[in-house]
Length: 301
Image (cartoon, rainbow, N blue to C red; front, side):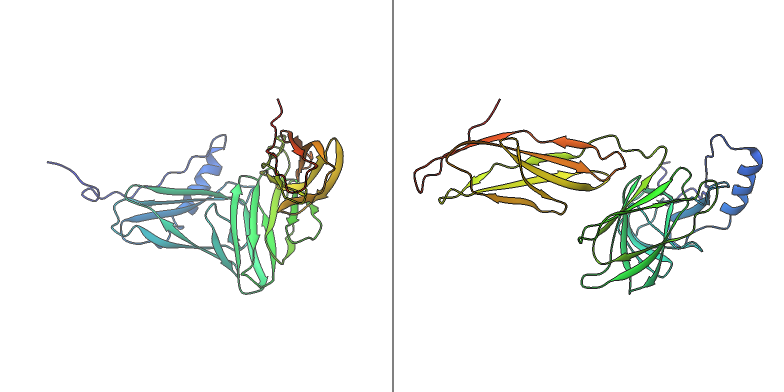
């Protein structure tokens, strides 16, 4: 007789704690029994606490045989709303995000950063990478939040607004819970975690698009740069000389060079504590002396 999902009732939850003592695992097992999430029929979800001394939590959700493929996941903890790998809205200390899971699909996340919104209607947040978070208030609004980091290895927070304010670093206490960090949000802000296991030793990706030569001889150069720790700055060189420097996207310059051949190159620096640097490929163009001519760029080897 064929068996379809839902024919056999199962109520099972499992949590793995490598390199932990039996007593620590037993205590976590007691807590997981009381952390079942409110989800549609056919779904299962639990929040498993990490063993002390960290305050991490492990979120696990599965659509085992539910006919409803979408639901709203709401999570609230004393430390604040957790920042998940899905974009979510956080109000006060509650995180709400949409989950779309077909039958037998799952969602899991390790929570290390919690947010409390102390002013403003809400904040949108998402964990972009294991050490990079993105925050922003609703368009046209401002917000103030308290961040509580509960990961095991973070030693500092790198707060990098994209609205023109300077970046700042905040040290985290070692061996104990760090006090909350207050951050004012006026636009998109990236929060990076620094410390052992979180070092970024890779330079940013940086690409210079094909320069555009106007009829009046002006050249427009656009650069695209990205990095998991954020981009601190982009510098543009013309024939080896510094032409411009900016800390905010879009990375765009307009230059009026003399007639002849000119070589452009971009250099990007990331926002990690290592300040990793990477240069783009060079692009050489010919600016003709005749008015109105538009010669094609000449590639370099």
